[in-house]
Each structure stands twice: as structure tokens, then as C-alpha cells.
Length: 99
Image (tube, rainbow, N blue to C red; front, side, top):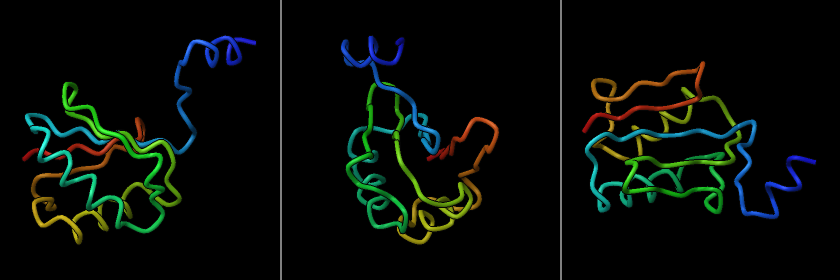
């Protein structure tokens, strides 16, 4: 019942495979670049991808694959993301990129 009421008011329900990518200090243009690169990664559903420039995050509601695989694929698609400035956290299903 709570989900039904939440849906009526537009509350987003976090999906099981949802991933949040934190990019502290990133501006809108950089978030757009990362979103474009993410759309090219295998297992990413581009309609489930959204960014929030105020929070400096990218949310991926649906991803078919492992968190580390996504980070590896993102490193290949976006040269600005490297082993030295990005890490994945499995417990909270996040990736943090320090640009």
C-alpha cells in the first residue's frame, strides 16, 4: 500500500540494481559528458539514466551487470575516468569519481 501511495505522489522507488555515481565538484557539462559515455556502456538502459547537477550525481535506475564492470567500461568510454580518480563501493552500490 505504501508503494501505491508513493507512486500517486510521484515518489521514485529505488530499484534493486540502481546505481548512484557521485562526481563531487562536477559542473553540468561534465555530468552530460559522463552520461553520454555511460549510454554507450553495455547493460545500461539510457532511459533509466538521469543526472542532478545540484547534487553532482548521476543516477542509473537499471543496470544489467556488475558494479566493477560498469566502472571498467566507463573508463574505456570516458578518458577522464581512471583507476586513480574513481572507485566503486559495493555495499551502497555507488561509484565515486573525483575529477
